[in-house]
Image 1: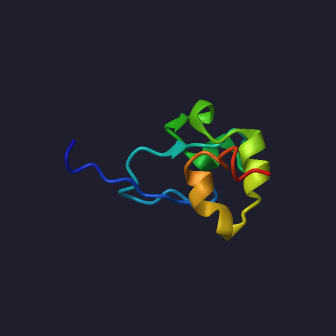
Image 2 (image 1 turned 90 degrees about the vertical axis):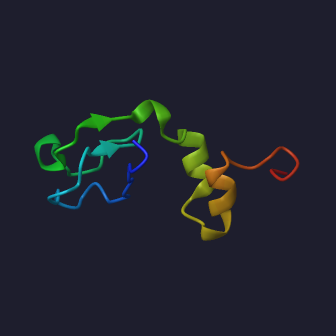
Length: 78
């Protein structure tokens, strides 16, 4: 497994040859996407960011580092 490679793709992109296992990591199913078209091997909603963390992040690029770390620390969340 030393040569394992992880690729990040949008769920709406069509599967490509060589994708390997397709895993969705999100608590919410992508709107308008059928399970057949998604062609997923697994849906890991349990490990996706919480709803609260997603709302806090709000796709703000300035919060990317804190989002990746699990959200604001108590000292910065004022």
